Amino acid sequence: MTLQEALKKGRSELRFHEIEEYELDSRLLLEHVTGLSHGQLLLRMHDEIAPADWRRFQKAVARRAAREPLQHIMGSVDFMGLSLKCDARALIPRQETELLAERAVKLSRKREGQTALDLCTGSGCIAAAMAVLGRFESVTATDLSAEALSLAKENFALTGARVETLLGDLFLPVAGRRFDIITANPPYIARAELDGLMPEVRDHDPMMALDGGSDGLDFYRRIAAEAPRHLRPDGCVLTEIGDRQAAAVSGLFADAGFANVRVWKDYSGRDRIVTAAGGNDV
Image 1 (cartoon, helix red, strand yellow):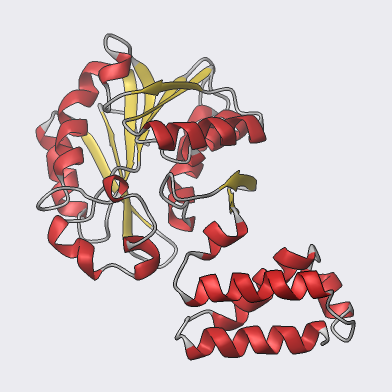
Image 2: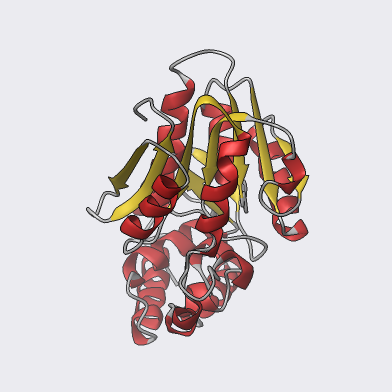
């Protein structure tokens, strides 16, 4: 069997199981099991696929057909140009979250000596991006999940990110400390909506990384209320939100005394980030 024939069989199987990106997923899985780049695969389409690679490809396609996330099957994900380990211990880093990390990195370049805190760090994607790509003096990451924090530590080691990791609930591990930048991608799915999520999310992402309480706003209430005690003068908070939560989350930060609250859209034009500062534009 040639690589081209294997690719076609993978596409057909994934399409039969209604995988939306069946063509892309089949190609990525074939590249993954063979170790070939996209360009190499195109040049070698008529080569025979090694028997061991064919068996691995069949298993990988079967896992994807069963709605296991592509990132879990491949074991890694690209985030801000960093290759991060990805598994069921934490939420899969997603492209829209890069917007939050990009803005934090940009803020780090405005002045020297800034410190950052990443709440609900999960895989550590935001903290790693800030530590590797930003100009922060220090980056601290907290998470309530010991499993997620173990994955974050592995990603910090993989990327060479120097990040202090602390186990605990939101700000509790950093009591008495203040930071210039606070980032967070907290759980924000309303509890009643959890069952309706895609199987790749509902059945494979940790539930504690998804469940935002009855209205999805539980963590934003706490962050907005507690952040002022952990911000330095001219500091700011950057948090990812669900695309229907902009008004509610903005209101929480405004009520907490933040004078400058802004909503930023993602590449699809959906509300995705809320930034809150005492006065300066972020």
